Image (cartoon, rainbow, N blue to C red; front, side):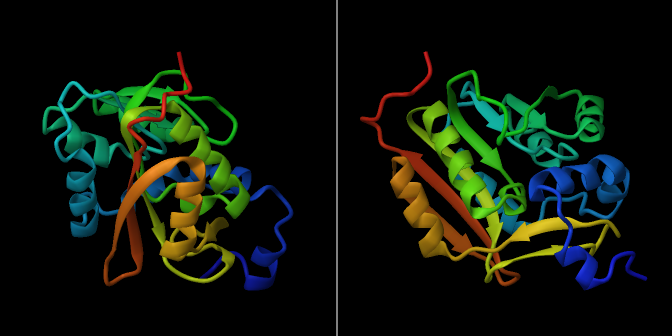
Length: 217
């Protein structure tokens, strides 16, 4: 039985992302147990597109690594991934896989090193539209020439709180491709590709203008 009714979920006063992170910190073990251990097909396709023609020496940062599943997939292919998460419980899981980790909240922390690829799978759907713009700009400014930003969202209208899957509230914001595309281009990305699977996942790979210098030293 659901722990929260819809009225309670809709009226949670806390910052959407902070409250969602509290849920993950409390229930990271349950999330891991209820999440696919194998890479879903749409995620594998998206990862392969993000990694296409990328050297195994590329500088790769994953935002919101969660259980470390996707980073392990890339590591198995010879890539060195800097994992990150804002949840201590997930960081412990990632470290147990033998992967490099750092604590990072994309909304409040900076990306200190220049990157060739930044990934965020099922992460930015937990931030609101203004926060999404901040995150996109922050990633853009950290990318090297022709760097890529790969991320996934869910297609739909509006936003909502739900306790589905974990029994505690999580915030979700839904998107359409054209709206996301406008934000990417406004941030300075020169182009992007995306695909949508039958379950409504929107998977993006955006490329920084090769003539746009990196904002980091």
